[in-house]
Length: 556
Ligand code: ADP
Ligand code: MG
Image (cartoon, rainbow, N blue to C red; front, side, top):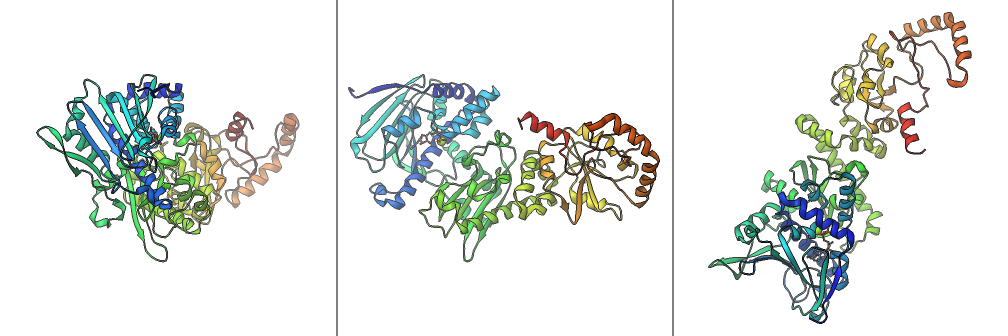
């Protein structure tokens, strides 16, 4: 028509399109999950907006998502009667890199020079995955509240340009029409579509409907094909492990099963439900300091999705936790600003932390293999809690694991309780050493005296350890001390020996001090060493050399 306008994609979109269509090949069926998840988001948004403006919901019955196919036209269509998009929305959302997830994806891809489906699944590049199976995509959309003449038609072959046209649309919401590529006929089979919906989208909270098949064609009778339940509202006894896993998958962003979960209902002056999962693998961007708000906790109020609120509901060191919090007593019209200063939410947050720590303790006690998997993936993140969460410091410390001079293995498998349990009578200090590698820690001359006296030393060699241990000065009423710091006085007999030795060596010490001048702070006779003639030691308040080096590298 005369009002059709053609525009170019933003350069980065073209780049994402290229990456996605060339790398998603082995998981191309996830396009359906992505489009359904967008449809579900759109229904969530409308339900939320309608709290303030109920008239937005007028006219169209319950919120739902329809998935249909047309074997003759060779199309698959995903339609929702959610919030819809106007012309501006469409340009911003489908023509530029609007979603923060996609932007991060792009950054990560250019940093890593590699693309695999696991990553794409995590970043949820969403809409563009349609072009993996379709050589043309048509979007028809009308914003809730707009007139039927205000509909928009967007169309593209995903090669650099898209067209825009104003059209008449009788209903609000969005239809995504996929014109399938020549060899993608399998997606025209209703059975295939249906099994993909039950696999990836069973727990989407809105009904997903498909037409019943008659004579090989879609009839105009519809059936609901997903469970469409808010799983967390069911009693635990009615939920199988597979239900929990499939709900986890429908939260998105992970192709793997969850490692463990905890599901609780709190009744009382304040009632709420939490369903919290621990993934089995770290997301790609966890240690890049990244925290993707959309991959954390979803806040519902009386089953209405309100927002992704990981930051309000979990401390940073538990940012790997996924799941749902459903509160009964918060006002539906809360904003993020309100949430940030809400006392009820503070209590819910404390409950979430407690549940996660309970779960981790249970894993450590009853399922050590799972705990080891957890620790490998998220142990370093958990360590941040030692500094971040004073109130739970002791509980977090209990969960930490270290390599040790007693374990002959670089893998961290000694707990502070193990250490304390093996301490000799009269030992009142938990000794550790920090270094930048296992080899440097295990081979340090600082350990000689401890070995000679058969005193265990924890070997810490992760980047976060030095920083973490600064906040952990005591555990179970025992002091933690770095073997490289300060005066080492193992027992009374040692002390005396050392004093005698110092006196005897005084002239030598004077000479060494004169020679080294202000290159050292002090020169002392020490009981530290048994085999090596000398070593460098730090005073109690000095930074470890590798930490000092790290800070220097970072420009401090
Ligand atoms: P994301 O879902 O991570 O934001 P997508 O690529 O899946 O990224 O979608 C991009 C944006 O397009 C969405 O954020 C949303 O604003 C818009 N969008 C996509 N599908 C729909 C839909 N069915 N209804 C309304 N808006 C949609
Ligand atoms: Mg999406």
